[in-house]
Length: 194
Ligand SMILES: [Zn+2]
Image (cartoon, rainbow, N blue to C red; front, top):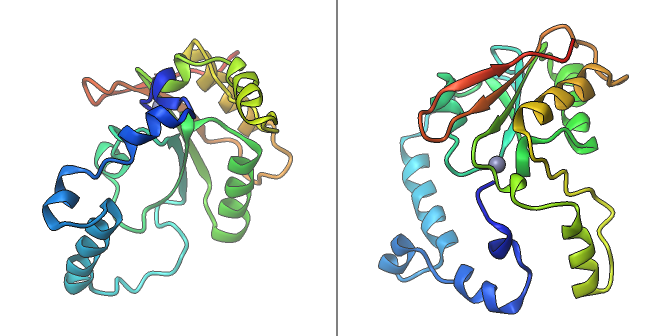
């Protein structure tokens, strides 16, 4: 997640900027979604059914931040069908990530879990007060935690711990965590708390 506090504001002023069409969509005269749908038509024109079932070939699930600079397949040398990718703001291990991992392992055969945070994440620049700010603005406080953090290494460690201690998962012996450097493309491994 790359947005800063200002960009995450829910005020009407900032939405005018984010509603602006991107350059490519402007060229074709449509919205950004129109552009993506056009791209899909080209993709489908070349697409051949790979004949795979839904179980990831490498039996691995990757939990990562939604950050636009992190191309998981390129960064990890992954091919279509290799893995499950579970992404959210921060790549944090929420109940819903545990839900996905549980289904990934119990219904679709994955065995390994890789957690990836990254440098310069938007979650480092906001705090849990974001929830109070939202309450002040819209009249209700979200039930979810912001999951903001100041120390990516420590948040990877506690995320590994959340996965490792989940009662729902079948396989918790191969859980590894990393911080991806958005300027070099390199992963740095974070060792679990001893
Ligand atoms: Zn991020």
